[in-house]
Amino acid sequence: MRTTADQVPEPAIQVRGLAKSYGRLEVLRGVELDVARGTILALLGSNGAGKTTLVKILSTLLRADAGSATVNGFDVATQAAEVRESISLTGQFAAVDQVLSGRENLVMVARLRHLGNPGAIADDLLDRFSLGEAGARRVSTYSGGMRRRLDISMSLVGNPRVIFLDEPTAGLDPEARVEVWQAVRGLAEQGTTVLLTTQYLEEAEQLADRIAILHRGCILVNGTLTELRRLLPPATVEYVEKQPTLEEVFLAVVGHRGQDVPTEMHPASAPAGEEKA
Image (cartoon, rainbow, N blue to C red; front, side, top):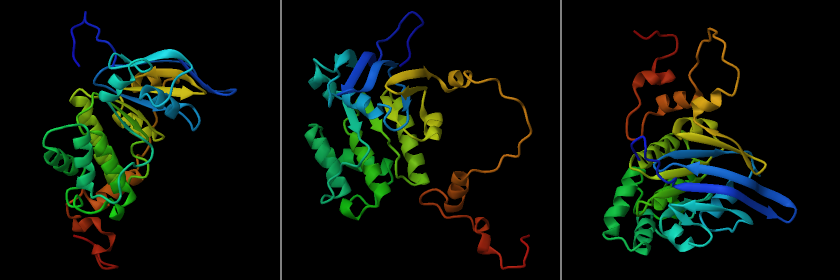
């Protein structure tokens, strides 16, 4: 969302002093966080840092012990219904009906949200996530990556203003991961606010406008990638021969979905002992 210099819009997500404990275990200890509208915030942290607990509180699935939080201007504790109407949550594991087809899953969600023309909505999302050819098949026949893409596409039904993505690309192959990244970028460009938790540091670098690091229940740092890099000593300039990453090799070899692989990419395309022209 663009504003003039003297306008400061209310954050899409605002967290103040949030705390949550399970017995003597303090999971969140005074978390402070703002997420601007139409931006992507990546929440990083090791297992047990409190990322999922924070997402559950913001999506009204869990109550905090202390502090406050608002999403789209609604208090998560006292206005839970309003919060739920304006958000979508994709958890760590795909929540899809395996008996239904991919298209039927999307149509069902669109009908539950009381949207018009659910079939067209389903077809659009299937195309966006490269599931068009598999749309009529039962989800039980899908690969793990396909189920995850379907799950994420279901979270986009109704164009929610805030989306929580908890480990959105876990278990996806490199091509599917890139497709999810493109979809997430497109959401932010359309004004949707995205808060994602991830274990992939490259994912945060690729997607996030801001990155917050949660450790032992507290936000240690929160800033842009450039700002976080300034926390370390200046880099020394050295000559290093850059080798392609395994992901770059994989995508070059298999090509993009629906495209043939150039013959020259195949190491076995030339007989042994012969040189290519």
